[in-house]
Length: 137
Image (cartoon, rainbow, N blue to C red; front, side):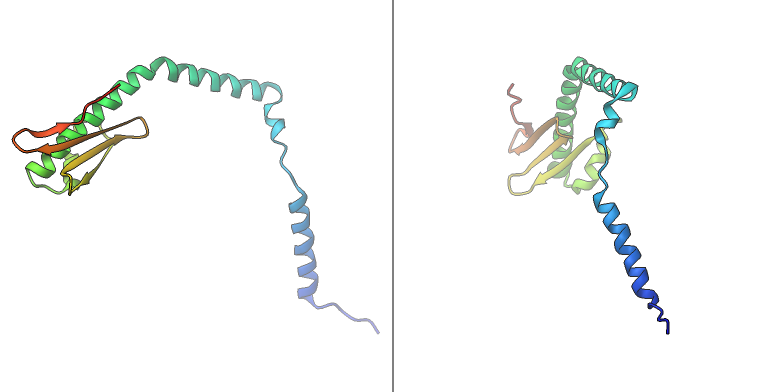
C-alpha cells in the first residue's frame, strides 16, 4: 500500500531547501572593482572629490551666507512681525530652498541650517532687533 505525503510537508521541504541555498549565497563585491568597471568607478570618485575640493570655498561661503540671511530674516519675521515660523521661509530669496529653520522660543532665537555645511543663529536683542552670533573662523 502506497502512502502519499501531505502537500504542505513537501512545500515546506522545498521552501527550506531554497532558504538554505539563499543563506549560503554570498555576493562577490570584489568582482565590481575588476576590469574597466572598477577603473571607471574609481576615476569618477576621484574626479568628484577633486571637483568638490576645488569648489569647496565657494560652496561653504554660499552656505554660510544663506544660513546667515535665513536666520536673520526668519528671526525678524517670527519675533518682530509675530508670524508663525512656517510662514517665514516664504520670505527667503529664490535659491534658498536648502535652508531649514528652527526656533528657540525661550531664548528668542532662530537657527538656520544648510545641510551639514553651515549653521547660524540670530537672537532678538531689545533695541537692536535680530542680531547674528559672531561667525568665528
